Length: 401
Image 1 (cartoon, one colour):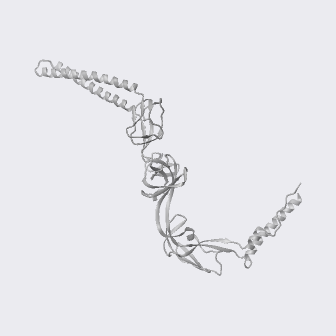
Image 2 (cartoon, helix red, strand yellow):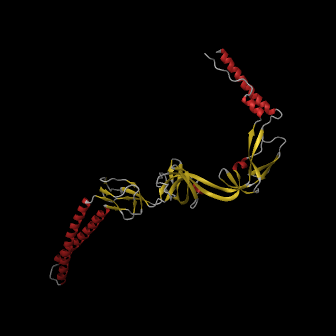
Image 3 (cartoon, helix red, strand yellow):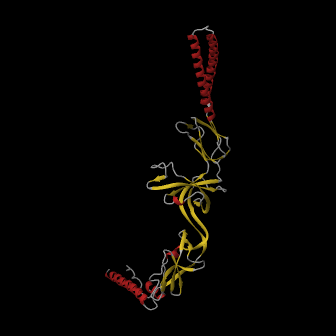
């Protein structure tokens, strides 16, 4: 055990000696650090700025088909992915109860109509006799009262009959648009109750060859988003495909907002705005409810002078420069550096937009100028070998039993 402790102590001293040797080598003649400069040429390119967001793919036109009457679903004529035409019957409800209600309303209507016609004729006769003073005021008023009551009952039964006919027509459910069934919420034999809300039976999409993406854009980015801007997005189902679209709407409000009815969706302390992007879908790859990762291009420029963005962050400072190097600096918040021999020269420039990788140069330097984009620190072979412990003994072996 003592031998093991002694070997560990010796190894620790060896490592410390290697570190000291590496430092001393830097001070030796010919042992100073070397730098490899990365050069870039000012050239024309396309540059853009964009904001990112996530969203959901939805049909441009989506209609929920329901029923306004309660009852049992008797027949379903379509299923998921069925193509339907406007006016095509897609479902029927059981009509027995509704037909009975219609028959009852028809009977009441016929009786009230007959009573109304009788009282109307009786009123006309009484009015003629009253004009000749052949009947009393009371008889005439009674005839007039009976006529008005019969008239009111007739119109009431007429409205009830129209309602019963309409309810019966609701039992036959037709497609309101040309489209495709993307959701079916009922089965044959299922009972639906039309109370305060109309129950949804089907969801139809008008045209799946043109879709829209509803993106949630953060409040910090919404200021740069405008209608007509280009957008690209990807979906996990097709990771190698990039889909193109255009911003068509920026929604100022959201039904999901819990704290404000004016501005946006609020989730804890994060506020987002819904931005609608329309995109063509000729191959039907985009399916409803897919999640999309979106880039909205807030500004785009083509064939403008650009440099790598990191070139604007380069500064010739120690240890990149020594007393033998010449640094010609200049005023300005943005500058690029050139190097000829041991002379560094700064060129003041004005910049435009950047995507974080390349930056537009709007003035101060010409196309074709070679500038420093960065520097990489390298060590001499002698220093590398010392740091790696070349020629030094290896670590102590473990005691064997």
